[in-house]
Image (cartoon, rainbow, N blue to C red; front, side, top):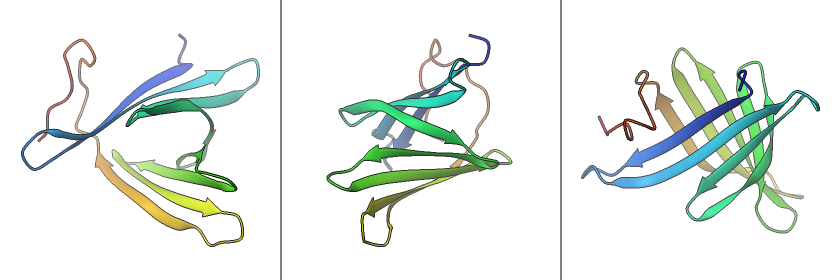
Length: 119
């Protein structure tokens, strides 16, 4: 697809090795509009969301009720992905609701080879 899409899967494991969190996303670039979109699915929810590439990573938002959004801000450097989500409500200061610190483990043959196991 000429580098216009990337597929991302996120997994979080419980201490016993079971999957405690699983998310799937497709980042796509539309050469006609020169814009990115992020299609995401997790916990029974999904949607297509604006996606902004930054010098250090990306930012995207999802609706979170009347007058509110969850804004996810990620930085990626030296194989480390740091992302946090803040609930932003009109007239209130942002409130951090999630933080992820992920380290790249290496290439895989996903999806043909199955999910990367917990290490």
